[in-house]
Amino acid sequence: MSQTPVLDLRGIDKSFGPVRVLQQVDFTAYAGEVTALVGDNGAGKTTLVKCIGGIHPIDSGEYLFDGRPVRPGTPREAAALGIEVVHQDLALADNLDIVQNMFLGRERRRGLLLDEPAMEELARRTLAELSVRTIGSVRRKVSELSGGQRQTVAIARAVLWDSRVVVLDEPSAALGVAQTQQVLEIVRRLADQGLAVVLISHNMNDVFAVADRIAALYLGRTVAQVRAADVTHAQVVELITAGRSESLGITG
Ligand SMILES: Nc1ncnc2c1ncn2[C@@H]1O[C@H](COP(=O)(O)OP(=O)(O)OP(=O)(O)O)[C@@H](O)[C@H]1O
Image (cartoon, rainbow, N blue to C red; front, side, top):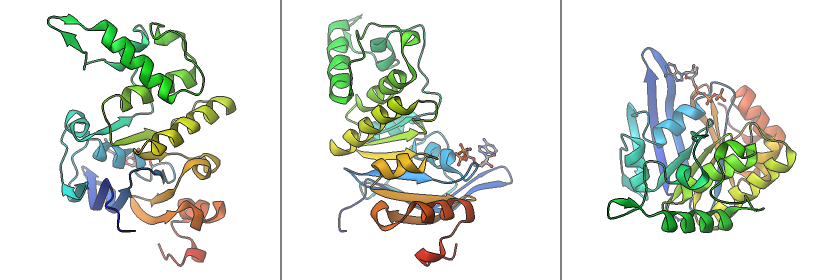
């Protein structure tokens, strides 16, 4: 494909002290596609995502955004590029309402005052574009929401800012079947709206339900970047657990 990836990381190394967590990792993600990032516990998925999102500086390697070299050094710098990460803990403030959470730290102001009507309207519109079902009033406290609704608010907060890339770290980890389904529908919709979506998941059903591409890490190394349509569940499980899939001709 001749299309330039939105995210293109090449030969990324990252160590914490003596521990080499990422070694020569390659990772690409394209606009309009869901790229699943898979790997066993400790494979380095979260670390890679934190490098992408500006939380961890990479030690070496190339980081291209729209084909241009970048080095986001903080989440704010990543956000300025249009990269948003929804972390596993969601980082929502329970005692605040949905609007306050969505604009936390990036509030809209009119003069000295907060522009509540504008924030409310934008929150409502963004949620309506995403939500499978209604989430109720945007003035509900986040503590009142279900797990799926909380995930929806966290995703809505991430896409509020003309984002180009949204990274979701295990969005369905704590959800039941119906809520997982809703979140997956949102994930698909984000890609259909033209975002590059990166989805970390351990659940092969979720991966195959929404992913266009699959990138597999094994012990901190990239072992495959493939189209989901070109591989089977069994092959991906083999990549995750053994770092190779004989039938793909990858030697690991
Ligand atoms: N700040 C840190 N200091 C030292 N080691 C770290 C640090 N962060 C992560 N690691 C180590 O790096 C390795 C990769 O961790 P990471 O959380 O990226 O894996 P993961 O693939 O996201 O795993 P999981 O699926 O369990 O979340 C692990 O061995 C972990 O102990």
